[in-house]
Image (cartoon, rainbow, N blue to C red; front, side, top):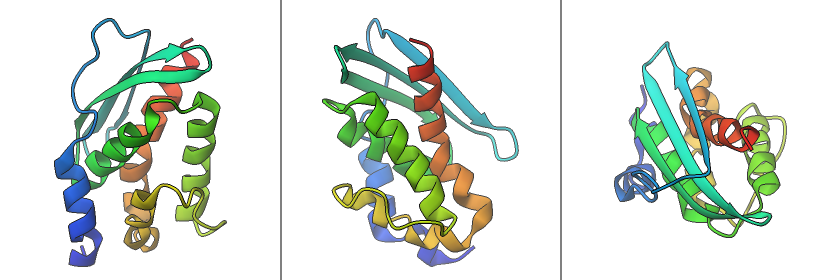
Amino acid sequence: MSEDLYHAQLVALARAADGAGRLDAPALFGEADNPLCGDRVRMTLRLDGDRIAALAHETRGCLLCEAAAAAIARHAAGARPRDLLALGAGLRQWLNGDRPLPEPGWAELAAFAPVKSVRGRHDCVLLPFDALRTALASR
């Protein structure tokens, strides 16, 4: 595995662990896991109308998974669920080389550029988005 894959910006994002932990009395809950590598993400959130009021995650996974969960948490409060779902779909397409980076306002996403060439690690980045999608589908 290339050391470039785990560059300083991704390490810092994962170590910041934005949103790590649990919400008290979450309204929505979703979980996703990758049985091939053991990564698991649990997302809990509360909505306020058509916006996310609060989001927390419990992530047991590799640095890429932790960094992606932290990136979501940094931007979740105040976001519309449909926008985050679209971002996850766009990120999947970007990693596959099918489109440009989906949200230039999320500088953290560009940090995942080295992952594009390592197809086996795409799921690590996308797993937190899958957990978010599962949580939002539970409403």
